[in-house]
Image (tube, rainbow, N blue to C red; front, side):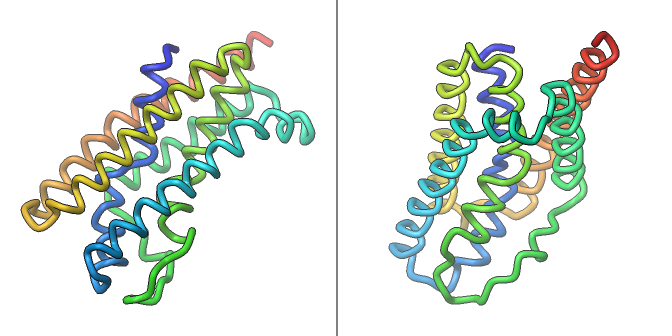
Length: 195
């Protein structure tokens, strides 16, 4: 897998367009300047969390005796479930938040941006080919940068987008992610069967 493919997968699992309506529903009662500040802060918190798992994840996996093949299979299953959610609709209502208050870490940084699927993808990348950690780090920064730009730009122009357009974008991203997740699962299964 190239770092570009890894960056695309990470961008898809961060799901900026799918999360946009949910983020907007949380921040809509706050002034627009405050919304921008909160989103920048939450995006940087999400990056910090992803970097923490990037650098500490391999030691964690060794400590709990999880093989790369198991991680690939589990990552494929998690990505598949996230993709199904993207295709058939959001369940972000599960994350309770009081309207009109500024969120801190939950629910925007975690689990919207730095969620289980993004963390599992990072752990899988670094676990399978640790010698390519510089490429995976570059992929992470590219995906996060694209998410950063997408969310901040979209928040400015959200009033011009119809919810159906954002929903269509999210479903398209979900379809791509479904194919990627199945491939990841099958690769992990093949490696496990050979081992």
